[in-house]
Image (cartoon, rainbow, N blue to C red; front, side):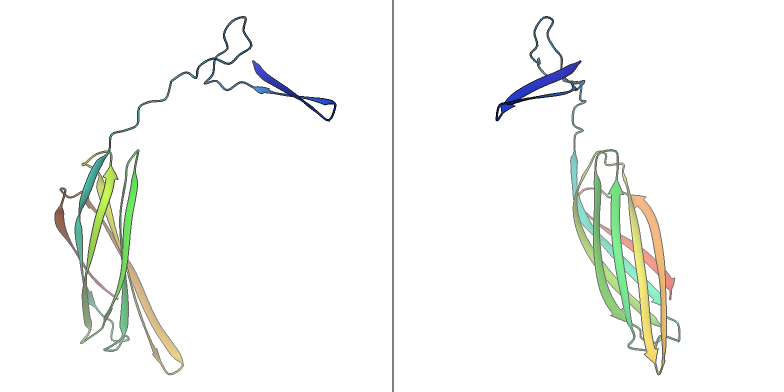
Amino acid sequence: MHVVTGAVLGGLAIYLAWPMPAAFTQERGNATIGEAQRSAKPAPSATQVSGTFQIEVALQVSASLPDGGTISVEATLSTSDSSYSNSVSLTETTTASGGQASITLNMPYTWQVASTSDQVTVSVVISGSATGGAATYSDSTVESTTIPLPANNATTPVSISTSI
């Protein structure tokens, strides 16, 4: 079935024809388009969840990164389901001291989820570098873990211990 429309433009008759979308019907014996059929499924119900993740990072630092060397820590939290996708990221810096470094990133969130049984992926990218003379030393690592979505309004500690 096609829809046909026409117009007269400067004495020239122009007609356009295109297939009728499946969501529309045409009444028998009448060339007008009827009401759209409602075949879409209802929108999923959303649950709003909020809270704070405390990402606690403890590092063993290579001797190639001297005391006072800057270390960048970027944490990303994400969750997704069939209806919603959420994420939050935060980058902070810390310094190496005595072959160690630590930092805590406080990351508040408010997300829409289809289910409170969703999972949260916690990814942390850690990188440090130092320049000595003509050489530059750099090191980085990525740590990732998946945890259950915390209860609403919870403060959730996540500990990451690694080395660079």
